[in-house]
Image 1 (cartoon, rainbow, N blue to C red):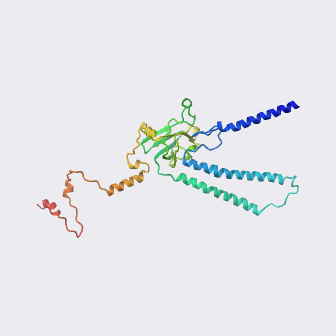
Image 2 (image 1 turned 90 degrees about the horizontal axis):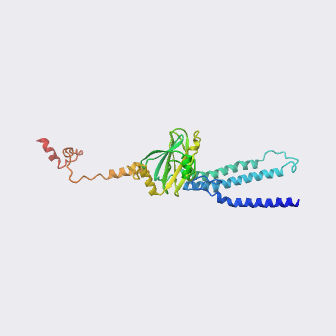
Length: 337
């Protein structure tokens, strides 16, 4: 008996030591990966854009404490009721069935909690809709089952982005089913407007590191935006059940420097200089400003230019009650002869 007790005690000590070692080693093997899921991770993906930082604050500092408090309160009430009002401790049950004060509390308190949550929720929602002036626009079209991207500002025609085959993904040491054959490429620190639509069924453009999740609906163009805070490769996926190959629609965004972005645009046959003001980001306002300037400042005549016959022989009709100009007889003399 003594040997068995000592063996069990020793085994328990070894098990406890191993458990502590695993617990303290967990942060080492479960470090959050930037731009992709983390094996063994329990939190949200690290944020790489202002919108995702706000989403983290809303989730970690507001929602989780409220949810934890509610769960602890409910669990405490259940335990207290189970101990205080079980048959052994309370053999003669009470005969009442309603309590006005308690009913008012459990009706008003949840309403107040939801109103408090909604204030922070609306602020985050407004931030998503309050897009700054974009530096460039990317149009993303969902197909069964790939994505098509287009850069209207840079004149880059639509190209198809599909899932990278497994052998190529392994060879390039990139995550299979997340890496794409043709990624979106954007410059770091620039506001990127994403126009999202679909060609066949409903898809969803989602990339967790930037806080993006926008439905792609046929016949409708939805709009979202992001501003990457750091360079790197970031992965997402279609987040709407769109068919049998729904799991094979990855989204890959490569965030690069401005020089690298300009080189990539040139490799795609595009240009960093818009052909017209309307093609620039926010082109409508720019076009109006340019048109107003041109109207206010007429073009100067070219030096040495000879007026056309129509200009020389067609006088301007004088206004009623105004004396004719001094040059009018000279212009009419040939006709009188």
